Image 1 (tube, rainbow, N blue to C red):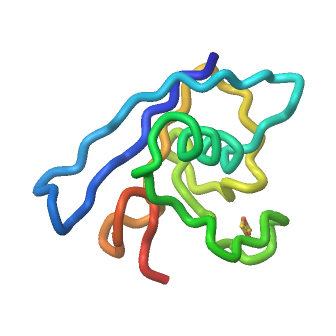
Image 2: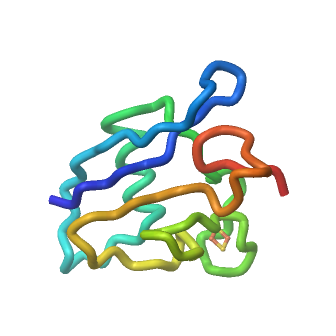
Length: 104
Ligand code: FES
């Protein structure tokens, strides 16, 4: 089980950002990516989470899926999860649209 803390903020509603925590049953031998973790959360735990998925290439080409993973920018579709805890944040807060989605 991986503990995942995800940055949440809807600027139209929230004055302050906060982190929401999810327990995700990642099997390390399956080599999940951060995108797999976000898909799991969205489909099974919290459908209100916003992250870049629409027309994502998921091949490390378009770079639209960039998020901060434990403080460092990374492609969500390419970064394989190995840590026991993940902290996911938008790559730029000054361009925030909602949660992990930024204006590009
Ligand atoms: S979705 Fe295109 S690089 Fe990750």
